[in-house]
Image (cartoon, rainbow over the protein chains, first blue to last red):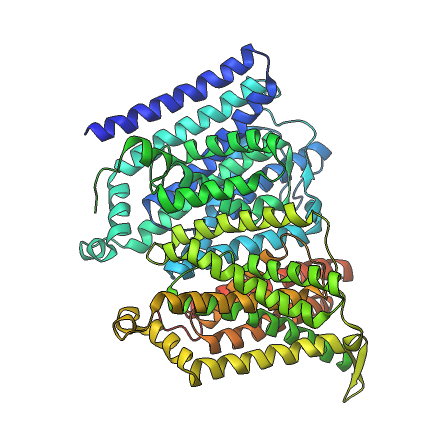
Length: 330
Length: 306
């Protein structure tokens, strides 16, 4: 139990840091630092989404960029139509674009959820290395589709002039936009923590360890995994919409397989299947990008070496090393 | 569409296919024998191309450049196997994916550091430049025809190696039961290093050969790597025969899809919409092919392992 407390303490400290750092930056008038923190929080959200499939469900998806990109394009398409006052669809009924964040989020969640349902339903027929490859293939499929589809910018992507609005807030103010992203992350973290403890989460965890046992008691591992994969895609899609809003830009890069790899990297740096794993990972990633990127143009070398050392010697990531082993389950 | 254009596209598809096979053969051997997913295989392709471009630039000899590509990639492959890859054999696939993803970052940025961000050029040697006339009046570049020949010869040599030599017997035995073969006195870690270096050398050779018809730059390995993965997954992981058939299938699908799909859509759509939908679908065609194959046969065409 002491180990559990140590991880909880660590998580609380992390939350405090995510509140105090931007507050400091706001008081010290360092808007760039707030933007960095916003980026870390949004990428953490994408990682929390993948962690649901990867950590809890044991589904190594190398195609989560598909959902990240879909969320991004949901924002890009809606906002670009609102920007040019041209409806998205005129027949059989009119669909207008929008600049309202809640509507955009809902669209992003629904579209990436549907995509995850379809991709998951097909991919989960395979397992192991074939699953990794087929999710990668679906990600690449959307990547090349985004590049070759000229209506929404093709290879160049889409720019949005003004950040989308949230009722009652000024989203152009960095600290307010950070507040929105941080609140979303907190809500999703609470939901994920409850999900992991729920009957569904426990069954999913059991299916990861021994699928046969779960099947014996009458639960279908396929359905559990499909639900987990869909929820996971929805969260990553929401992160994609926020990420696009942060940059006011979407491009096919969001769909690229390096994006899938990076989201996975956050989880590994932080710790697989830890609630705060992706949060720690994303914060470290952004900090490294900022610090090492300032020192050397080739900072990816150092990132690569660090990642290699973590995989080879520090299994369990940062949280695993600091807070001790996961409460034993195998 | 004229038959000559179609024949040229079939040859282009075949050329892409055999080069993908040379890439995929190493990947599928490494997975079949050691059970390892190696994302860094594309980096070895890149290393081969850079070694070839550097040596060709210094000596002017294309043959020396190819030898340099083979040996540089094999040497780097053996080194990486001994230092890193060896520790990953008994890890799960997630660790393998991440460690080799880390290797990609290290190799790509390292190459950028040494050679800079600008692409290098590797020229086709004069004796292989220019077109030849094939039966039927098809004018086809001699170099691409050479690539097809080299690719098919490598395929033949690999089948011979696997089926007829002592090393091949050990490799096949290693695929079936690695503890048994170690118990029979085969130095399993040496065998692994040899297999990995062999796969690396093939990737490096493919990089040098393909590098002469495109530019040699950082990041050139990853698109090919993903295509090679599509190939080994369609063919069934671990199967050389599957890799050859799937490579040619993927090569033809990619090349012919780019020509035929827009033409097909033009039959019943206006031209500009047909081109945009046709080319969007064509760029996705091989991934659709892979998804269909995996849904039909979850372990690929010739895959035995579940």
